[in-house]
Length: 175
Length: 111
Image (cartoon, rainbow over all chains, first blue to last red; front, side, top):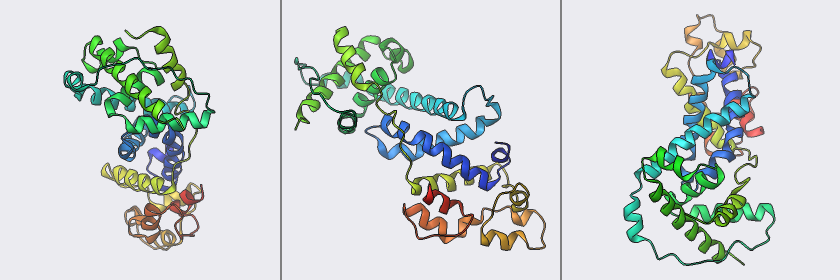
């Protein structure tokens, strides 16, 4: 790590290689549907990790520490994107909610992951991010509201529409 | 408010999503490395090739030609990969035809 901080090029290459493999899948799947932002965000995470390296105390593995930085960067991205979304406009444009059936399909894990990824890629960005933030990263609607400056009610409406759209696509994706 | 049941179903569905290890493509690693080094250089010169050799790191044949030259540390600090064909190929292809010993871009390809 000292060599990376001293800008020794070969150690830097090893550092970049390790960190890139650690964060690639983690970031790629959480950025759906904006996969084109992957490279920029990964670059940001690598630089943040390098800049924070002097404060790394080895209390956790370097991998967990770098993933923690990635999680913060993603949180920040979700917060910004949902904050920029005009939820009132979303409300006016949304279709009327209807009751839809539950996820009844019995899928193996890989197929399920693939279907989730495809649907997230297809949803409006605010819907995908809201679902990932709420159900993957387990943020409460209240936390999401506080972080984005929206009301809790607005976040719940966003989540309801996101769930509805997700479900509709889930059913359409059945073979 | 969504029903607890509804919330639970979505939580179950998303549990574990994105946790699988996925190796990054080598061309992405190559581009990230190049940009990373450029960012490092914005804050001052890289460590010289003498330091790389002293710390036991292998350097490529092109870097060796510079490293053994009878010059001071400063001319040995630029990012020589910037002008190398291996970098260009590695940034654009995941299986680039490059085979230089101790080249970071070749290592990305092999990982």
